[in-house]
Image (cartoon, rainbow, N blue to C red; front, side, top):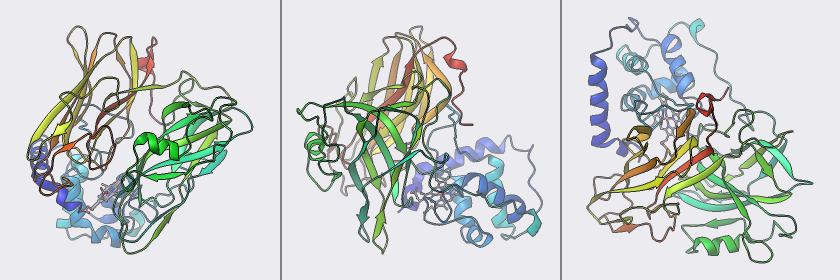
Length: 459
Ligand code: HEC
């Protein structure tokens, strides 16, 4: 299924990248013979094995000589096409923390390894096999809250679940990081979750209600689903939601902010609400996933609280024109928001579903200058990162943030869920994968002097 996605666009993009590099590529001569131990293993260990290992998110490892050899041609191809490592944002437009992008030289090395006969090389040159922590990517958590285990039957296709993960604490508590850890990370595709904060005396039993609603199988509306999960307060009103507290994508872990910034206050009674726990397909076996959430307590109260708003579906400004995509058409939509005060942007998350083709986000300052935010020339439904800027981006008051999306509802779109294509819309914000969405989620702080100099890179 995946190789189908390579498509013409990918090949053209690949050709353009190769042409650009032909002209500027003499400085890095390749070795006369490329070997696994000397040249290929370092590339794989630095860029691939975080996912391509026994417990990783990809379905095959690339750790040993034998495994690398088996996939040598495929590796050369997917790296040349910039499909792997997965990083849909165009690094020439804007850069983010933790971006995984191979250099042209690395790509040529993988290609030359195939041409040179996939040789092993001297054993003593093999770098240490990278070790990855188990249980947490950050350290030893202070508290671990299990997500209700979920059984994926053999040969099942994608599932999108709404999941409640309730907790009760002896007292209000501060936390620095909240980390989602997949039980079986080759089936957990991504998670985007909020925190439900019950005010004192408003909720008797956080454990009452169901813990999982399958949004595609059940025809529940979001509000009905919230009720089934028992989210409302005892009096029927709704508690406070803190957005995007726990997000996960393979290879991306809990968001760590610098001192004095971010962090969380956990209420005595609360829950994590995973808006979208996406399970990928399974093969011939049943898979029981037992994921969990790690919490790292903090001694000090949260720093400046990170806030969030979004453009588009369910957002502060609508999608224009309406998100209705007729069959056999390519449609462009946008959403614009005028920023009422100076803000500092930390992370952004473009969101579309299967018909997405490209996405661009930028801001126009009152003086007409453009502030680049993100460009995704080839939308990939599977890799929807929360992109974190290396340093905060200041957006001055009165600027207009603009998100532009293009949808491809033709047969050429390999991900089109319908054949022949059908009319697709946002279906009143249903959030199902086969309906569409257009969102640009932005986390920010009210601007303070010097924000642009604070590094958000993870140490
Ligand atoms: C962030 C996780 C991640 C990283 C990093 C990563 N991969 Fe992958 N890779 C995947 C997943 C998951 C798949 C399965 C397809 C999918 O879901 O996109 C995959 C699929 C592949 C495939 C098979 C494509 C097909 O046609 O099925 C190849 C080959 C591959 N990766 C090579 C690499 C190489 C080489 C690197 C490093 C240069 C790399 N990957 C880095 C997660 C990753």
